[in-house]
Length: 103
Image 1 (cartoon, rainbow, N blue to C red):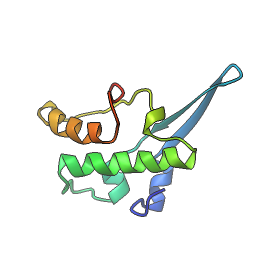
Image 2 (image 1 turned 120 degrees about the horizontal axis):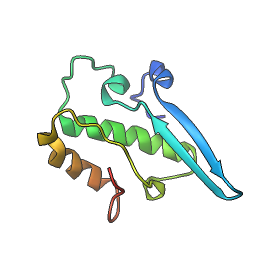
Image 3 (image 1 turned 45 degrees about the vertical axis):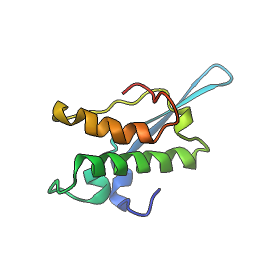
C-alpha cells in the first residue's frame, strides 16, 4: 500500500475475491476512509484531500492485484453532505480516462 497508510488500517480495509465460473473474478474493497489512512480523527482535511487519499489508496490496492482504475466497475461513495458532491466528483473523475464508473 501507499507510504501514507498507517499499518493499523490493514484491519479496517477488507478485501474479498469473488469468482464466478472459470474466468470471471471480482475483487471488492471496503472500509477505505481518508481519516483512517491519514490517522486524522479531527477531520482537518478538505473533501478534495480526503477523496484523493481514498482514491490513491484504492489505486495501490488495485495495483497490488495487477489491476487499475480501468478495471473498476462501480464504487459506493458515502457522502455526509451532498453539497460536496460536485467537489468529490471533480476529483473522482480525474482518476478515470472517460466515463468513470457509477458511484
